[in-house]
View (tube, rainbow, N blue to C red):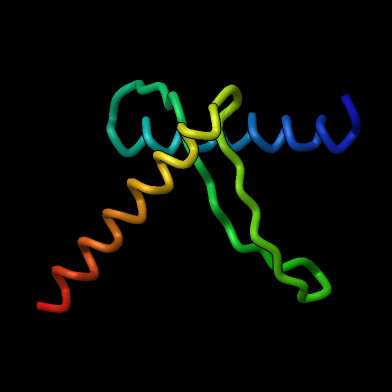
Length: 84
């Protein structure tokens, strides 16, 4: 495993913990986040922008695509409902 792989695994683990805590705090009860996808635009210190995508460890590509498609469908439906 390379240093870059270690860094990504650490980011993945930190995000899993942060999302799990946020959801548990919001729900008011213990929960376990099974799958997640984080899609974030970041800006570094030099003003360069990048898009970062992180999925839960062990997710298959179709799991990631399914979650992204669900989010897209919800956003589309919300947009359509707002247009009427």
